[in-house]
Image (cartoon, rainbow, N blue to C red; front, side, top):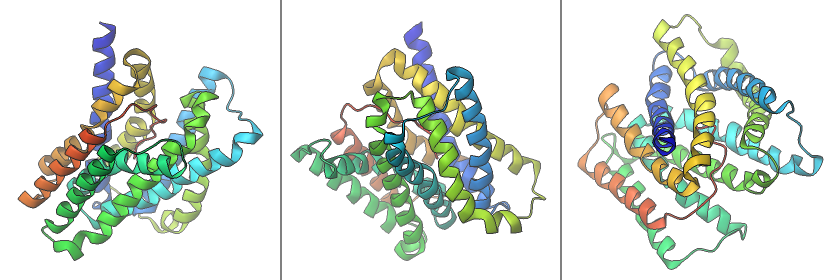
Length: 297
C-alpha cells in the first residue's frame, strides 16, 4: 500500500507539471503579460512555501559558506529559468515546448560533466545526439516553419539548460539541507531579480482578467510550485530516486497531449517523430541520480 500511494504521488506530480504547460500558454494568450504572470506567481509561491518550510523546520537559515552556490541556484532555477520559460511559451506552442523540454536530462549530464561531477560514456553521447536530432525535427516540422518557432525553441532549450544548471548547483547542498529549505531559499531569493525584471509589466498589466485566468494562476502557484514539492519528496523517500526519475520521463509527452487536446494545438508527423527521438535519447541516457528540489516551471 505504501508503494502504491508513493507511485500515485509521483504520477500526480508529473501530471501537474505536464498540465502547467497548457495552463501557462492559456494565461499568456488571455491577458497576462509574461513577466507580470511569473512575478506574481513566484511571489505567492515563495511566501507560501517559505511559511510551510518554517512550520516544518522552524528555520530557513543557511551557512555563509553556501551562500554563493545558493545564489547561483536561485538565479538559474527561478530568475533565468522563468524568463526563458514564459517567453518560450510566448513564441511557440505548448506542445512544441513540452517536447523540447525532454532534453533536460541531457543538459543536466552535460553540465555535470563540464564541472567534473561525472563522466560521459559513448552511449550517452549517442543518446545526446539522438535527442538533439529530435529537437531539430520538432523545429523543422513546425507548421509555422523553422523561422516561425525558432525563437521559442531556443528559449525552451535555455529553459532546460538553466534548470539543469540549477539541479547541478544544488547537488552538494542536498547533503547539508533538506530539499524544503533549499526550495524555500531559492524561491525567496530568486524572486527578487525576477521582480526587478518584471516590474514594468507588473505596473502596466491590465488586471481585469476572467475568473478562469485567475483560477489558472492559482493552480500554477499551488500545484507546480507548492504541492508537487511535498508529493515529490514524500514519494522519493518511499520508492527511491531512480524509480521517481523514470516516471518523470512521461512529463514531456503528457504535456504535449494536454496541449493538443485542451488548446487544440496541431502537431505534424515530423514533430511527432522528433518527440519520439527525444524520448529515445532519454531512455538511452537514463542513469541513477539524486533529484533536485522540483520548483517546476
